[in-house]
Image (cartoon, rainbow, N blue to C red):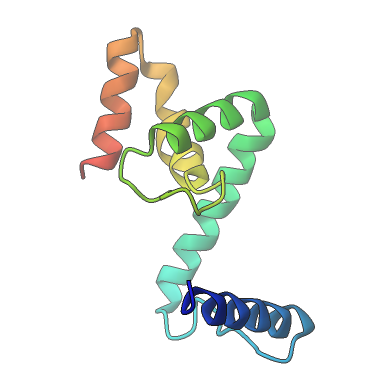
Length: 114
């Protein structure tokens, strides 16, 4: 317990500094190749289009993935939008071709077992 308090205090201080702008986070794209940045931006735009086209389906798929956590990335600390990229650009666009629940499950399996 004694070591937990300083860690929590440090976390709060860093958070406050980031929020105030005193501590700048590096951009995640720093040092990435331009073609990778372009692909990330294109995927984000495609995801936003899918989300705008059917927000209820997008939310349902993303939440189902978050709750199932098929690749173990939520760990109870990440936000519910953790699986938005997969929902929007990988899974939902493939769902119209599915004619059964088994095929839909296969789509999900394929996307996380590449």
